[in-house]
Length: 249
Image (tube, rainbow, N blue to C red; front, top):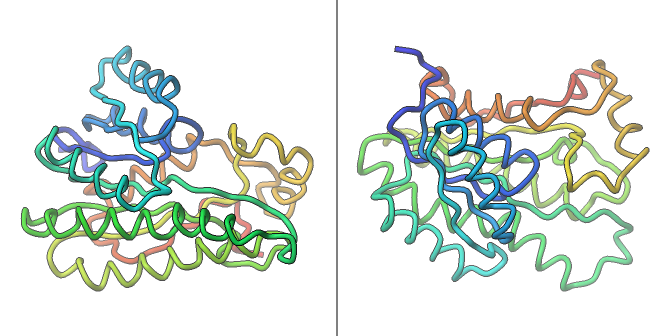
């Protein structure tokens, strides 16, 4: 059996209507998973699901605004009720505003932490115990290189994702003994719809790494799919950098 195969598994991918999330949904479906495409934009979500189905895979769009705790819990319950279970959870949805600390509004702090920290927390709290009762599952959190380095203007975003990296290790310790593997992927600069507005700033960040270029969503999706698969059966609590080598210099 191919250790990368995900046939028979149900994968919930948040923030899957574009960028890294969409690439992950398509790749996991190609490897056999039934993918639940979660996001706020119905048109884009249905388009991703249709791309999967056009390629012979299985996918359904599930609408969810993960800025609200009640909606997060409802997403988990809906996924379990409609599809029986969730075997793989990819916490990819996130907000990434940049700007000076002194110009950051309280409302923006609340929104970023609600989406980047509280939403994964509630989803894991809802889904990980059920995975443990079934004897196994995989959770992959998507963070950022800004969680490990101090970048001017990225205090809010970086700190929220640094929290997720600590949660990854804590959840690995908590749920790993019951068969649930929890890991994270730490992307560097990646060219997506969400980062398009960064323009030359993104290129400048990417130039600091040995690869000397921005990454592609598919390259990050490959790492996520690996950690979700049996090929990573002995990997617990890891934070895998997919950053063109930025963490090496």
